[in-house]
Length: 270
Ligand code: ATP
Image (cartoon, rainbow, N blue to C red; front, side, top):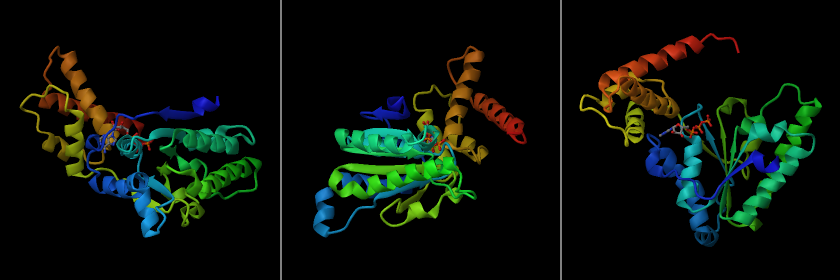
C-alpha cells in the first residue's frame, strides 16, 4: 500500500517546450529548483542556501504538475509524487511514517524531486484543531517540516508542493526554511491559450481554416487541461464525420460542447 501511495517516475517525459504560457514560471522554477541541483557548488561558494521548498499555487489543470516533471526531466532527477490527501487518509501514525519513507526513497534515488500535490490537505487553517484526526494531520505536517530541515545533509533532493487553495493554507508552512519560494501558476491569458493550443495540436491534422489565435480568443477562462480536452473533442468531431482532417467547425462544435458541459455542472449540488 505504501508503494502505491507514492508514484515514482525515473524520467518524466515532459519538457519545458510542452508547457504553454508559463515562461515566467518556468524561469522561476529553473532558478529555484534546477540551479541548486545542477550547481550546488556555486551556492556553497557564494555562501547562500537555495530556497528550501517551492510552492506552486493556482487553479486546477494549469500545469503545476507539468512544471515539476519538466524540471525533474531537465535535471535527470527521479520524480517522486505524493498527494497530500493520500498522506492524511492513512491510519494513525501512518502519515508521518509515509513522509519518512518518502524522504528515504528520495535519498536512495537522488538526485530526486519530491512533488507533494494538494499540500493544503496537510496544512490548512482549521477552525477546530482539537479533534484527533487533525492532530494526526498536524503530526504528518511536522514530520514533513522536520525532514525538510534535514536537507543540507541529504544532498541532491529538492521539494516542490502544489495547491489549488492557497487562501486555505496555514501560513506557518510559508516561513523561511520551509516553503519559502512561492510561484503563482494562473489561468492562461489569450497568448498563453494560443501557445497551449499549438502544443496540443502539434500532432494533429489541421485544416488551413483552423486559426488557433481565434480559438484562443474564444476560450477565455479555460485552463491548459481544458484546452487539451478541447483539441481531443475537436478531433472526435472529425472522426464522427469520417474525416481525417480537423476543421474550424470541429473546434467550434467542441467549444460549444465544453461550454454546455460547464453550464450543466454549475449549480450542481456537491
Ligand atoms: P491539478 O492542480 O489538478 O493537479 P495541475 O496544475 O497540476 O492540476 P497538470 O496536471 O500539470 O495540472 O495539467 C494537466 C494536463 O493539462 C497536462 O497533462 C497537460 O496536458 C494540460 N496542461 C495544463 N496546463 C498546461 C500548459 N500550461 N501547457 C500545456 N498543457 C497544459
